[in-house]
Structures are given as structure tokens and as C-alpha cells.
Amino acid sequence: MMKRSIKAYVTLGMLSGIAYVLMLLNFPLPFFPSFLKVDFSDIPALIAAMIMGPSAGVAVEMLKNVLDIITTGSQTGVPVGHIANFITGTLFILPTYFLYNRVKTKKGLAFALLTATLITTFAMSVLNYFVFLPMYEYFMGFYLPKEIVVMAILPFNLLKGLIISVAFMILFVKMNHWIVKQQTIFTK
Image (cartoon, rainbow, N blue to C red; front, side, top):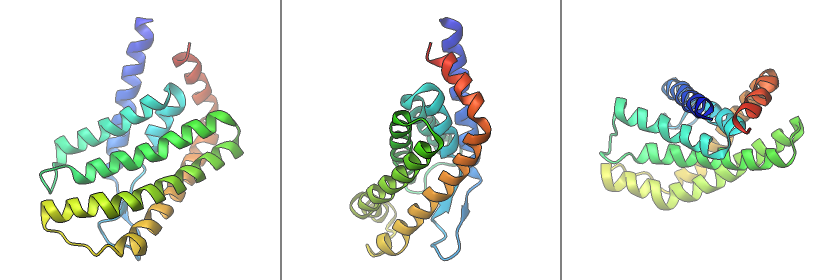
């Protein structure tokens, strides 16, 4: 029992570290504002959720953001971007996990990822409109018109979700046997 819990903490730490490094390797997409960037840091959190359960995926999302706050800080003094990143990742991971566990097939995973992308896109559009854009304006004096949510943030989050989904599907197909083996270790 003790050996398994140590392995879980080590695995969470490793996946959080990988997520943090992937978070640093972000890049903008053409035709979108430069502050909207894609990174693949949600993939290790998805792997954690798949092998250890949804709380592990959320923990990886939290730890990568804490590591980023410690190392890069926050422009606002309040980690608005980190909070948004954590919520975005959590909104993506949880539906993927719960839907995939109902239909454990490649088609089930594709459906789960697409549904999670749509949920995340819609929820983050609402949250950006009512919460995050006003927070940036309050803490940084950084005003963005609310129309940016529909013109840039919504399509960006949709495209980002699809990019991450495709990347995860490719990895999942290659890593499926390892993931199943890890699930048996962590769910005994």
C-alpha cells in the first residue's frame, strides 16, 4: 500500500513537471491576438486522470500552475492567467475522463474529447466575458473590448481544444497498453 502511494506521488510529480515544461513551450496561432497561446500541458494532466482518476488530473493542472507562478510570477500580482489556465484545464479534463469511462473505445475517447472541447470553449467564453477580462482590466488597467470573446477567445479555445484532442488521440493510441497497465497498478 505504502509503495503504491509513493509511486502515485512520484508519478504525479513527474507528470506535473512535464506539464510545466510543456506550458513553457507555448506558441501563438496566426490570426489570433499574441496573448492567446497554445501549449500541450493539458496532455500530462489527461494521462494522470486516465491512470489515477480525475483528482490526479486536477492535481497536475494545479501543480503546473503553481510551478509557473513560482518561476515566472504574475503580471497582475494576482495570478489571473494561472487561475484561468487551471479552470480551462479542469474543464477539459473532467468531461473527457467521465465520458471516456462510460465508453472505453477510441470512438468514445474522440467523443469525450470533442465534448470536452465544446464545454471548455463555451464555459471559458462566459468566464472570460464576466470574470477574467474584468479582472485583467481591474488589476492591470488592461482593457479589452468584450467583443474579443466572440471574435478571438471563443474560436481560439475551440481550435486549441481540437489541436490538443488530436495530439492526445495520437498519443493515446500509442500509449494505450501502458495506460491500461498503469490503471491496474493505481486502481487496485
